Amino acid sequence: MMADWFSYSLTDFLLFAPETYQRLFVRYNQAVWPAQIVGALGALVVLWLVLRRADSRIAIGMVHALPAIGWLWIGADFLYQRYAVINWAATWPAVGFMVQGVLLLAVAAIAPRPAGHAPPAARIIGLGLMAAALVVMPLAGPLAGRPWGAIETVGVTPDPTAVFTLGLLAGTAGVWRLILLPVPVLWCLFSGATARAMDTGDAWLLPVLAAAGLAAALLPRPAPAGRG
Amino acid sequence: MTGGRGRRAAAAGTALMRPIHSTGLMMPAVGLGTWITFNVGNDPEAIAGCTAVMKAFFEAGGRMIDSSPMYGSAQMVVGRGLDALGRPQAVYAADKVWISSGDDGPDQIAQSRALWGVPQFDLMQVHNLRGWEAHLETLFAMKAAGRLTHVGITTSEGRRHDTFEQVMASQPLDTIQITYNILDRAVEDRILPLARERGQAVIVNRPFRQGALTRRLAREPLPGWAAEIGAGSWAKALLKFILSHPDITCAIPATTRVDHVRENLDAARGPLPDAALRRRMIADVEAI
Image (cartoon, rainbow over all chains, first blue to last red; front, side, top):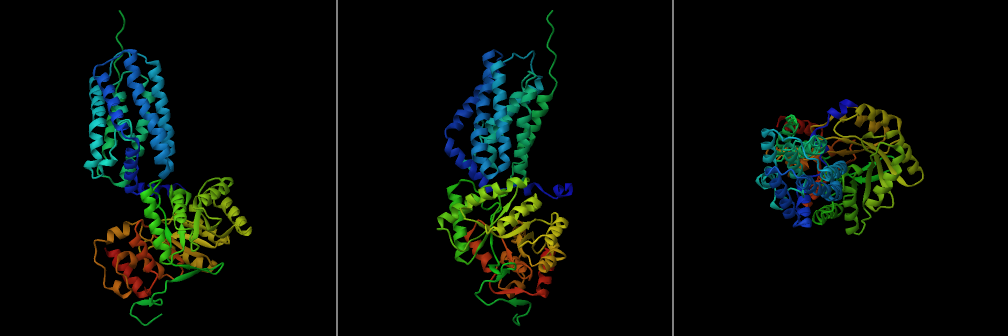
């Protein structure tokens, strides 16, 4: 039985044609417009707060609550209502996205102020990933030959939202980041495998960004300074 | 047989028909698969494209459409197409049960039937032998009750052939579905002879290796023998190779294109390669 599993290739698990996958994004983007603008503006607010090292309860709440909205929306609408129609396996990621949204909201509600900061390298990688999710990832599809209408943007489609969140977690010192890591990492594995099976020109991008985000998020945080 | 060099000929213009031996039902030798190609979700434009393929399929004399709950939205798309085409009487509805629990089989079959919008299936197959013991019990009971015409099992890409043979040998199956094409011929040794011995009709999936074979051969010129069998394309030649095996009942290529579905059905008309030409075809394709 195990030998049977080894006889499968990635493409054996691909249930749809690449054109169908592109059309899914085209139709979704048309249906939710102008949510793409709202998602990008929300991501810019989060990026700005992280750049400013804002660590008030309100700021920490916002940098987690804003992405949470994206995760919940993508899980319920894009993955469950739309993607799962052509890929029954997407039901599980849909649940994962909603769980991630709830976890982010929980962190936002508690809004614990982290003791200390992320190491400089992790912070730089984190900010870089957030910027890449905002700017580079939406351009990757058209540069790889996919239609502009299928553009993938932060807060609205899963890949850039996962990378943006990994960037956020990489630049965070709080220990809660560790429970927020599995879902985006697992999604990047799932989506990266899908892109690889479809043999898209930019299939390497998501796994590389995710690996950088995971490594940066797992870098040890300096112990908080003692109080006198 | 006619006297033409390297070929067996069917009557010109008449589509090749082969029997489902257990009931004697004659089936056009080319059907329509839905794996990947019909999994287009709720996209109205793409559903219309699939409906056009089905329309061309029926117009060209096709009957067997094969799907599965594993194929995402394909069953729903077939059902929408049948609705749009006014529920063609010609359709031979072939589907699969694909769920681990035998207890869940009847519900899944009922759901599939609702998606197709058919009163009952002509053929229900146990997909990739998943939970085959319990599902075959269900399917044979449905057949005995007159709620199903034919019962079968499927595999693909050569998987679990040992178990497949055991089930073929021990169960009163009407059909089997296997992978067979000019490069994947493992079934010739044991499975096809066993099907002949057991009187089981043979349905062929992946005739073009999910398009990989035709994409690979598209860069190569058609050999001279293609003209001998009236094949103006690699796809037609590859299908004629499959249909020339006497134990094959029906091949089910999948496509999203109307011109391709017409070409596929046309492969069942005119001459087919004989044994000598089959050997040349294999040698030529393996050499590419």
